[in-house]
Length: 313
Length: 146
Image 1 (tube, chains in turn purple, green):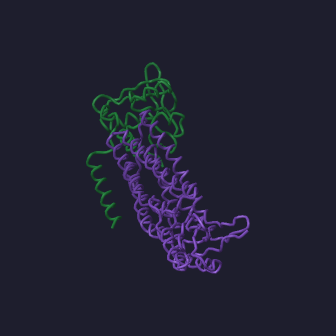
Image 2 (cartoon, each protein chain N blue to C red):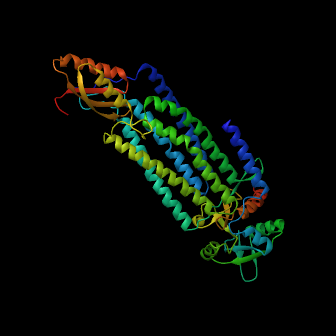
Image 3 (cartoon, each protein chain N blue to C red):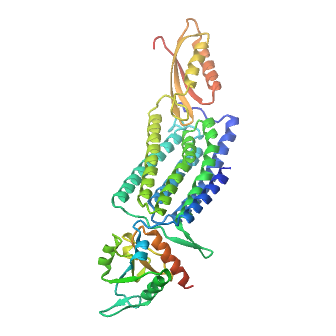
């Protein structure tokens, strides 16, 4: 058994990770206040209920990230020879399952409310002796649920890209899109104010469809990563060109005639094999060791690579 | 910057809301009460409300009458059983249901309700009649006991 080598982030990224961890703690504390406030004011509005659950769910990627960040750098063991990098991918999977299933629940719930023609009753509150319709308070809380969130999302995004961390990326992306949820819910509440009761459930339905969409997209990506799909960039939209660069690099070695590669993502880093056809008379043992080191030094994401001399592909 | 924009947006929305007299009812209950009469369901539950062949009285009946006077409404009392009155409330045929209901009433899934006027007792109203509940709570606040 040869466990994979101890992984350490390059020094310039260690600070980035610490920054991301700090931001996630801040988000978590903020989201807890949002969830409490939303729960206090949501009353019988379906849109508020949906937005509330969405906010509660949006803590999941952050929590998963914080948990996974405790594990991923642990040294590989005999039992886990590939190390613990995949904790991130597993966290990503669980988060997306939750997102997807709650999204479905919310969509069904909103449709039922629509069909039953259930009208939301939104009462009033007295603040310093002045009567205020709770709808206005809801809108206020909704904007509190959106604005800091968008700022946090914008701050997290570049960190996620630097760290090649998909769960952090998903989290940042969800935060950035939070204003859409809040906005939809606000329209719903204002609709109720105008006596258009169905706008509330309709807004809820729109929000839940967007939750389902996000959940499904993340679910697909998490499963694909666990299926050892070829490495993709952090948005999961296009293949990471790094692997092709590695192939070009290998082809540049003077002793290499031809080369094929195969890489997979393990959380933030890549594991893979390089198959090389060697030119005659090369001292394979020494050259391969050297080449391996060169590839690992080329980019921090290339964590574990096997170079295999072959006569045919 | 974003914060500024949103604060301005909210202030704007709020002022639109105030000027348009929001919230409105989904079935115009309050306007109906103004032009016709406020239909008040009454269950027999002394001392809050009680009815017999010749009179309807009770602490909550008194409150309803005071509310109606303040808003300039006629009142039509409709005595009945809880379940039949709640059923009629679904279609907003009854605007308020009184009779010592408590805030954790079993009917709270089927109807809307006002805030408690004494920390415990509420009135039932049709779901989604947000102007009506606004007016009622406005009144209930003025008589709220400490």
